Length: 94
Image (cartoon, rainbow, N blue to C red):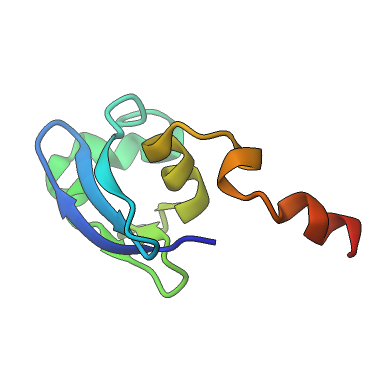
């Protein structure tokens, strides 16, 4: 599992992310802002308060968080089988 190791907030609900494997790029989260559990992001000052959690996830005040795996997939455009090739082997031996 790749974890976020650096995050920089950009304009328009975009985040510049770097993962532990060196993958780096910009993720656009504007489609989430103001919807469902992300309603609090209507306040852009709150969105800017993102931090990296202990598990490499992104966390915001109020309990909103995003899984590093979903962010990694969004950033790379890979599907889970491509990004995590050992996943099927691990599940088969569980």
